[in-house]
Amino acid sequence: MKLGISLGLNFTDITTISEFLQFAYKKELSSVELVAEPPFCHISSLSSDARKNIKQEALDLGLELSFHATFSDVNIAAFNENIRLFSLKIMKDCIDFSLEIGSEIVTIHPGEFSAAGHTFPKDVISNNYSSFKELATYVEDKEIIIGYENMPIFSWTQFEECYAPKPISLLVDKINSKSLGITWDIGHSNTTEFSQIDFLDLFKSKLVHIHIHDNAGPNKGWTDTHLEIGKGNIQWKTLLFKIKKANYKGSYILELSNKSKINNSLEYLSQL
Image 1 (spheres, helix red, strand yellow):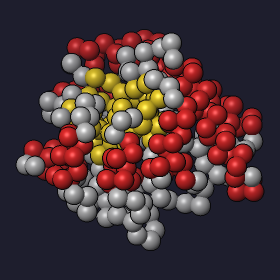
Image 2 (image 1 turned 135 degrees about the vertical axis):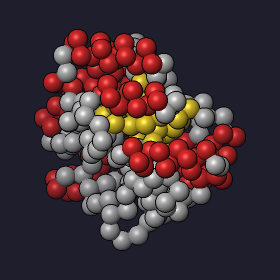
Image 3 (image 1 turned 180 degrees about the vertical axis):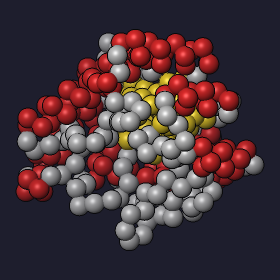
Image 4 (image 1 turned 120 degrees about the horizontal axis):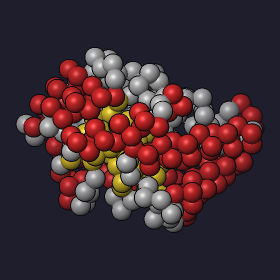
């Protein structure tokens, strides 16, 4: 089991990317996911030398790098074409950054409805498809695979291709590119009414990356709480065994907000 950790925008206890890499190394982890959000990895503020240093330090420590494209203030499914195209440019910048640091996987969120999008839902859903198809084409001659990430249930802005396993699987099948797979966020899928087995059965042949964190399942209000492993209701022992049987070979990335949650989650996983 290849375990890694993600440096999200709300991570505490860490002040630099280098410090995070060193922490992962000391915990004897396999990989680190960097997230293209401030304060740690706002890519427009990282020089060419800084990018080379990230790549070299990860190599020196024996850590694989993956990359999570920015998700704040962008919408690759936007009804407003200017917004959609600018969001696509940002995704391509993230892909280029990923190449510079030696990451072979870039996780990208689907788009969402805006106010106008609710009036023209078919256009927004079509835009989401077109954007991922364009991004898959963009990386075809590069050593990069895009992971389409399933989202949690959280607001009125979502369409089914954001969170439901079958529409996501069908979209990836329809694009049919070796450069496009699925990043399965198990915590996100636990906020929906679909079972984890529904996700696994539909995603297993397309999985390129997995995010792990816990929560209390689908309830009223915000449920994507990113609890440490074992503090929610996900049946990890059974689920991880089934994923292993599905022959998944990629990384499991802990998406947590501090060292303590990571330490507790690693201890819990070690006892399974």
